[in-house]
Image 1 (cartoon, helix red, strand yellow):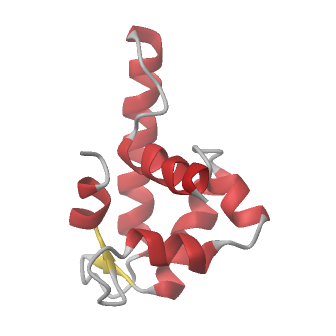
Image 2 (spheres, helix red, strand yellow; image 1 turned 135 degrees about the vertical axis):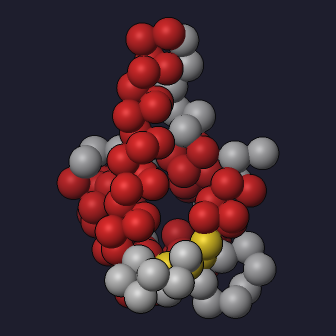
Length: 102
């Protein structure tokens, strides 16, 4: 359970890679994460509901970013959503994703 939580936090925060060559990979992954967030936020609310979050996971899984393929394959979308929704409002915002970085 703790490993799962760490993997989500690592993927979202970009802590998966370190070093100069990996730093470039990190930037590309972070850019893709932001892009995927914006593309699945269909109502442009700046937050993802459960349905949008599932699409976010799927998009990142297809891009083979961090643990998202594992989350998608294991059908753990809701579990991941509940972990990321730190304030319990039923939405995951960029602020909550960034907070996981710290």
